[in-house]
Image (cartoon, rainbow, N blue to C red):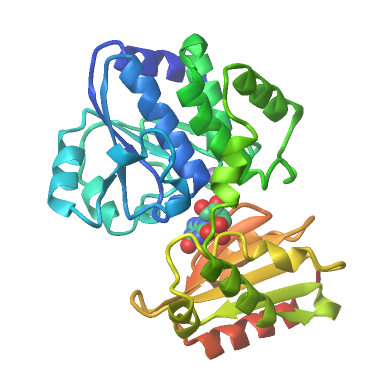
Length: 334
Ligand code: 5GP
Ligand code: MN
């Protein structure tokens, strides 16, 4: 971060303020971890923060400290709009463009309070008074740790804040496996463990908390998988009917896309999930190595993300979407 940006934020935070903290739509472990870590930090510093999420967060994150205070825009637009309009400062975390908040974008656009963006996605939009954006980080949570340190407040990081930070680092690094996991990541985690963060309990809360139906849904997705060996690609689908059959709840499809990459020789994986209510096919892409799924998602599926993990959507039918995807894969050298 630039020194003048740090000073500007120190000045903004030198008097108690009403502050809104916003994750992206469909908040994941990193989005929830970073917003809640900042929430606890700001409370400690006598501010009045509120986390306003565009929509509901998945059940497997409900144990996180402070999650019970999170306001859900989609469920209570009137109250959430009021909170946003009254905020004197707005943090947007773990996303790079206001449209990532869905409908909330139209409220955010009209606000006059200054925005601070902290994020690790490529190509950040230019809406914030201060943009702390760096794609070399594996998670926004790791950046929050730095952000608090830059403000000279590292001593404020306690077990509660550390638990939130640890959660985002763990989930966004694929349990410390993805390429952006560095020595620094592990040094931060070591410090968090020393603060009492339950580093072996948290993975259990996150990953060993499924219902049987979630496992059966995974089984269906694995059975639906198609492998295009010569293009090092594997993809799978889940229709709305299949989701309904297994009583899908938010979060159930998290991580399924990664199974494609576990096949020897596969470097590109995708999952296509039908959402009848939103009339879209939601897509997740993952790659191993050089193939840039962020660019692929941007070019063809109205999306984006990172080089090795991105998402997008399609307004075609499932069949048409798959046809489009297969045609593209055939033209892509992997
Ligand atoms: P996931 O596949 O886990 O939903 O998302 C993987 C990464 O891509 C995350 O960093 C996420 O923020 C980003 N991403 C997912 N969907 C979209 C999308 O529709 N648009 C953009 N710009 N990024 C997305
Ligand atoms: Mn993230």
